[in-house]
Length: 77
Image (cartoon, rainbow, N blue to C red; front, side, top):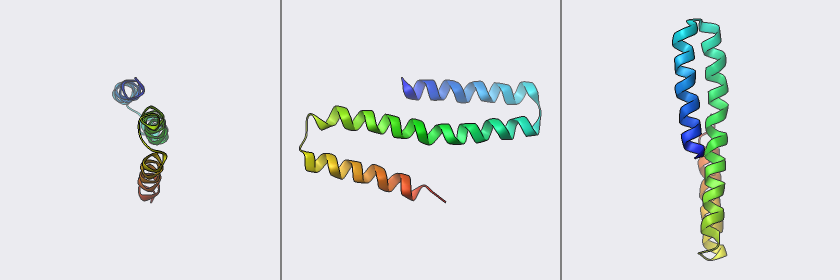
């Protein structure tokens, strides 16, 4: 559901880009979307970890969490 919500927000922003036709507004909306993407990624990853945590060993959950952290750190500039 979070990914669907994120996709709908991005499509809505694209329509706003086309409708408003202002570069400044497009840049502001793009900056907001740039913040929204990683937040959605962390939320979805966290929900996935919680659902998997009850099924596998704590060591494996730690490895998965470490992988998510490394992805987030690696995606920084």
